[in-house]
Length: 76
Image (cartoon, rainbow, N blue to C red):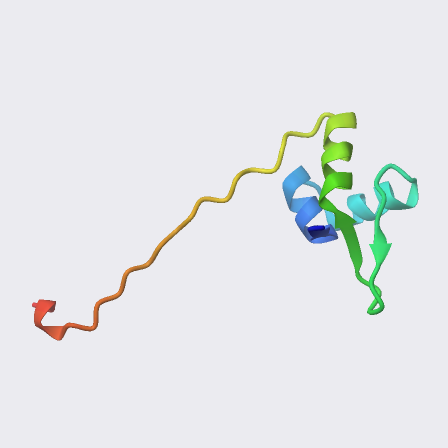
Protein backbone atom coordinates (compact mmCIF):
# COMPACT_ATOMS: atom_id res chain seq x y z
CA UNK A 1 0.00 0.00 0.00
CA UNK A 2 1.47 3.39 -0.96
CA UNK A 3 1.86 6.02 1.73
CA UNK A 4 2.25 9.80 1.63
CA UNK A 5 4.21 12.04 3.96
CA UNK A 6 2.57 14.98 5.69
CA UNK A 7 4.61 17.24 3.39
CA UNK A 8 3.20 15.56 0.29
CA UNK A 9 -0.35 15.90 1.63
CA UNK A 10 0.28 19.56 2.48
CA UNK A 11 1.62 20.24 -1.01
CA UNK A 12 -1.32 18.46 -2.68
CA UNK A 13 -3.83 20.45 -0.60
CA UNK A 14 -1.81 23.69 -0.83
CA UNK A 15 -1.65 24.10 2.94
CA UNK A 16 1.09 24.02 5.55
CA UNK A 17 2.35 20.88 7.28
CA UNK A 18 0.95 22.33 10.50
CA UNK A 19 -2.54 22.28 8.95
CA UNK A 20 -2.12 18.61 8.04
CA UNK A 21 -1.00 17.82 11.59
CA UNK A 22 -4.11 19.58 12.96
CA UNK A 23 -6.35 17.51 10.66
CA UNK A 24 -4.67 14.38 12.00
CA UNK A 25 -4.98 15.51 15.66
CA UNK A 26 -8.68 16.31 15.15
CA UNK A 27 -9.35 12.90 13.59
CA UNK A 28 -10.22 14.23 10.14
CA UNK A 29 -7.28 12.42 8.53
CA UNK A 30 -5.96 9.08 9.76
CA UNK A 31 -2.18 8.62 9.92
CA UNK A 32 0.43 6.62 11.75
CA UNK A 33 3.87 7.43 13.11
CA UNK A 34 6.96 5.61 11.94
CA UNK A 35 9.47 4.41 14.55
CA UNK A 36 11.41 7.59 13.74
CA UNK A 37 8.37 9.75 14.59
CA UNK A 38 7.39 10.73 11.03
CA UNK A 39 3.77 10.80 9.91
CA UNK A 40 2.55 8.57 7.09
CA UNK A 41 -0.88 8.71 5.46
CA UNK A 42 -2.19 5.80 3.38
CA UNK A 43 -3.04 6.86 -0.17
CA UNK A 44 -6.54 5.38 0.17
CA UNK A 45 -7.11 7.40 3.36
CA UNK A 46 -5.95 10.58 1.64
CA UNK A 47 -8.29 9.92 -1.30
CA UNK A 48 -11.17 9.45 1.16
CA UNK A 49 -10.22 12.71 2.86
CA UNK A 50 -10.11 14.51 -0.49
CA UNK A 51 -13.59 13.31 -1.35
CA UNK A 52 -15.14 14.13 2.02
CA UNK A 53 -13.60 17.61 2.24
CA UNK A 54 -13.80 18.33 -1.52
CA UNK A 55 -10.11 18.78 -2.27
CA UNK A 56 -9.07 18.32 -5.90
CA UNK A 57 -7.40 15.01 -6.78
CA UNK A 58 -3.62 14.66 -6.79
CA UNK A 59 -2.16 15.95 -10.05
CA UNK A 60 -0.73 13.26 -12.29
CA UNK A 61 3.02 13.48 -12.51
CA UNK A 62 4.31 13.98 -16.01
CA UNK A 63 7.08 11.76 -17.21
CA UNK A 64 10.23 13.65 -18.14
CA UNK A 65 13.07 12.06 -20.07
CA UNK A 66 16.60 13.40 -20.49
CA UNK A 67 18.57 12.09 -23.43
CA UNK A 68 22.32 12.64 -23.27
CA UNK A 69 24.80 11.87 -26.02
CA UNK A 70 28.51 11.68 -25.36
CA UNK A 71 29.41 12.09 -29.04
CA UNK A 72 31.59 15.21 -29.08
CA UNK A 73 31.39 15.50 -32.89
CA UNK A 74 27.97 17.10 -32.48
CA UNK A 75 29.38 20.03 -30.46
CA UNK A 76 30.02 22.92 -32.78
